[in-house]
Length: 295
Image (cartoon, rainbow, N blue to C red; front, side):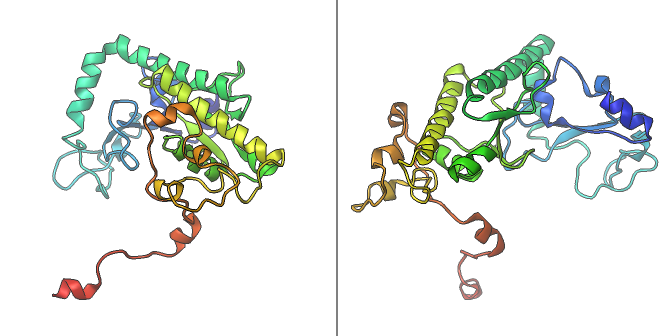
């Protein structure tokens, strides 16, 4: 209906293929009615994300827009009214595509559809476990989510003085890389478990977030100061935990091993808390001085 409204007023629809992990084998960009859609190979088609995703993925368009597809100086591709590609190659990255091809052939239509169904199921299981501790946004009429579970964290700042970035940093102490921060909604954490995570791993992730919420509650109850607690000081490095002096009102154990299973396979962050805003505005070169290159 949304696409129909846009088309009725002369607009075109660009569909982000990042959500295809919850669509392959079910709806399709053509069924939805998108005019343009790029299909990311990372996540959905077995390729690691890699700093924003590898530079390859098909761009699909309607017949009406095909004439505007970009051309290329080295190959006869694109439409009759296309402009030269700014930064692209006609067939993507050769080292990535065979992996995707093999994955699609091995999975088959039934396997790809099953992967989509499990990805959606995993995200909804995660949402069901976390909805009491964190509000879940972008739910449908039935209260379900798509392939992504987006937890609202704004209330944490208002109630406990804990920022969304504090939660993300504290997750490092639990051994988890932070999920997507403040996207697509400000002050949220978006986790996409996909079909490949086991229930045990999803439970560990949920246990970590639920325990972090309990840590916030100690701030709200006045048991822990707002300016010195496990969240605002996270992450805790091995150097800090092993230091002779410990001035925090919580134990070293709570800092490094907040849950029992973390002892079995502890991941130690290499760097403690940094000032993101300062780092973004003040570039510091750590390379050797220019004189050393002259020599």
